Length: 72
Image 1 (cartoon, one colour):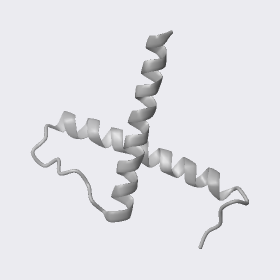
Image 2 (image 1 turned 135 degrees about the vertical axis):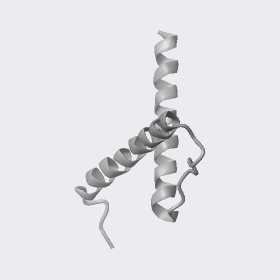
Image 3 (image 1 turned 180 degrees about the vertical axis):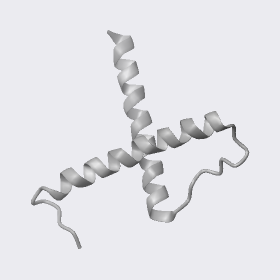
């Protein structure tokens, strides 16, 4: 059971890091410089960052439906 807990914890940490990087990309426009990277590495990094993008989009859609948040 401890191994499952560690895997879940590690997975949540990876999603949080990806979400933070996606937020940085959205707010500043900075993206990782992958010019010299292999196409496989580029695909993995883009897929990883897309997880963060989808997490931000999901949170935004859920929070916009509540009365606790409003658009300005």
